[in-house]
Length: 174
Image (cartoon, rainbow, N blue to C red; front, side):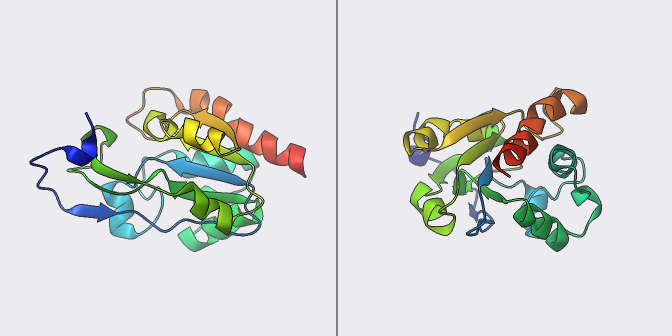
């Protein structure tokens, strides 16, 4: 079924966070759509139990998880990492990806214009990875990563083993 045509979805239309992209971005990490905590805080991965910040911090060997949000973003930018979501607006009750309806995807062309040096697109979890073929077709290297969500059943160590690929990619490029 096409979620855009789903009748009876009474939840309000939600809009995601603006992309964190710039000329120096070489790696873009795409989530699915921000959860309620992230939308309320206007911050990517704001839920305290989400493993995103510790995973990225460990993969690039930077103390991002301990920094205030704006400093975290500066740290990502300094390493050439950008953030965005594959869905820019949708209807959803709660924070689960399975509840997303009427999803509007982000435009690959927008990322290309904002970050002309972009070369690797990483997908945070299975829902985000559904967009992988489109990004690969657009000419980008792609990497599907296990979800940083605490609802995902892998241990932190198992997730980190996969997420270290981000840091390894950046090291090879420097």
